[in-house]
Image 1 (spheres, rainbow, N blue to C red):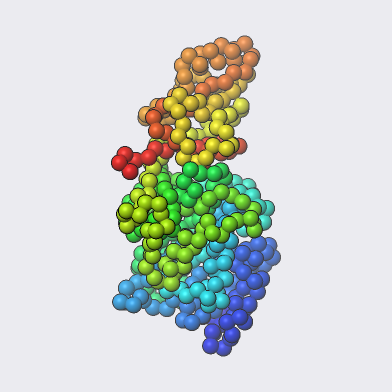
Image 2 (image 1 turned 120 degrees about the vertical axis):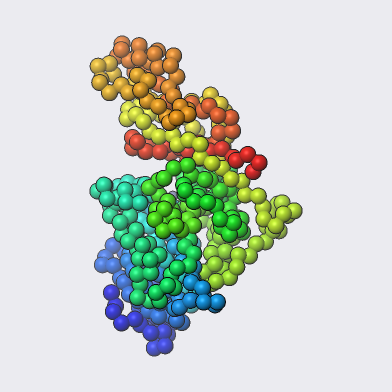
Length: 413
Ligand SMILES: [Zn+2]
């Protein structure tokens, strides 16, 4: 870490960005597995600090125009290493910030979440980083657990104003966190935001999301180990996980798909108001389009180890409605004599509403088959509520982890 900040007055802009990010960009710095390049510079009155691998902050001096505390925005991408479109968006933004092409009038912390997974172009290296935040990492031992601890420390330092670059009290402003992702499969709503459990949906955020052409909002129903839940729960931030289309390799993304949110983020960072263009929506009769709001009504978990099957075609898009009676998951019973027969004995419940309770007749039949040493399938989760739609179905997760969300559009919305 350079102790004495480099001064903008003494260095050309180009030289300054070279000093701060000698590898050329925050993305290249994050992908470099050598010693971490950190440093601090003052750029037009803004303190720019490269804090860690893939972590950089921008802190304007003092207060806002009317003496109010500055807004603090955490912008993260690459929590899943193969979700490249938002990583590219954030990298280009940081390039423009460091080179002075983009002005910054709020406090900003940019985080590229999982650089090792980004190198591998995979979702994660050892485990899903977006399941081990909010202290869960303390009970785990993995590359992602270590990274979650590092990220949490930087977020805490930023929101609590630990940096010497900020005045005391100047950090008491609004806290916002956008964690940018892309989804594994296509979605009936191409871009959507997930609000963590326990916070209200602020009007100003709805305006930002609508102007960013976010097509749906999903309200979580429970605490989680996600980055956005951590920042909202621990720091009262207005946090969202934002899904911006489908996973594609680096260089294969169409930037025009993200132009709206890119533009709004840049306005936000420059201290400008959200600019909403109603003509970009089909329905121009209202100032803001009605963004459909969905609630999570059920989390489908992987509850058995052997022979677990998720019955959904890979081509089925997120937010596709499922017919009542659709058997979404099944488990193959273990062989006769295996003491672990929890699936068949009716002990398990899927929460108070008992959705997903194994079908009794099916269970008895399977028990009989299992007793004869023949493996059989149990219905594990069956869709029971009209209007149920599926989001984030995923195969191959470990036992105890989420396989899919069942969501329902809110009445009158
Ligand atoms: Zn993701």
